[in-house]
Length: 126
Image (cartoon, rainbow, N blue to C red; front, top):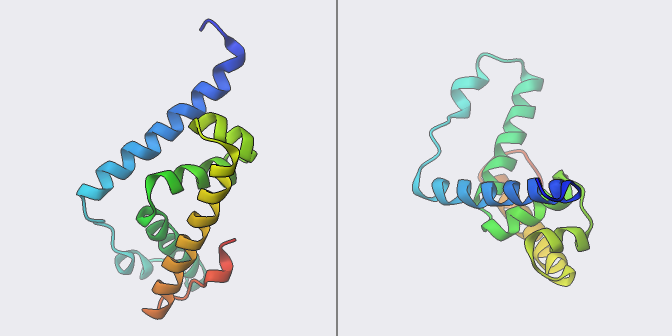
């Protein structure tokens, strides 16, 4: 590697491309996992946690790839708006607006799930 100081940014760029690639693959496939098959073999508390994670995962998968990328950079990697913008090649203001829209979309997905009888609430996502 010619510039070892940029290794961190290079690795983050790979992560972003993976998010986009996975979203393309998922659009072509249906989700084969069924929570009901797994829930019988585990305790009620862990079943609830698993159901929460499953619902959040389903909501995340329904987001646009650019929203997923911003959520991953900000909440998973803990980057600032400026750093996330540099990784994505967009201004920090665009990162903020995408983060706002991604959070709103995620809340809407969770609320839709709650209306269908799933117990995860919009208040659990900020």
